[in-house]
Length: 292
Image (tube, rainbow, N blue to C red):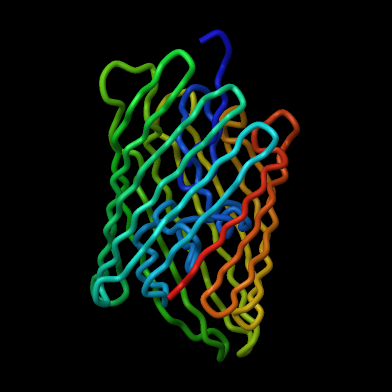
């Protein structure tokens, strides 16, 4: 290639930037608004791109979601659906597309299955097919994500609370045939605490810690911390921060976000603040969904 290709990807459950390693990042505006905290995202727009097992602890039986996120340099779209089978099983499917000004076009299709174990635990597996289209070449890859989630009700100082934890080993697989690309194998774990200050006011704080194993140029730790204030389950305000050890590949950013829930409708927004010389600068995301 005559020039480097800088693309966004999901590394350790949060946004990463790597040269010539184009995968699609999470389009979930709720997770982005909390600094990229994805392992414990509950009632989010795209659980299959965050932690597929955590979706079983949502109250929703069926969910349809659509997202757009982008900046001056790229546009990305996603559509997902999730449905319970009984009380302990969840099936999910998703489609993503990432288009850049240079004519590069990345597309991925995901299928997931999760199962609850013993009421407090859940496990999940996601299979992924990715197609990369470049002006001079194209490539295809297959990968698998393994997920786990835990949820436990608590009582803190006389207030109702819930402790959630999750982990994911992502992108186990590789490209089909000869290719200069490699998949970013990564591991992420996170925890979050939901606390009801009263019947109308809820506060959530969460953090994720991840590590990118491959390729060597992107190896390093990543950390996301975020918080959400929820008013009467109708309006949410969010903020967060993401730190990337390898600034050239996983840049740091701060984020803010907001959400609205009304009947079966869900709308979320997020905006990222990153350094001027990174692809994440002035990135924003909208997620829209229906919950039943």
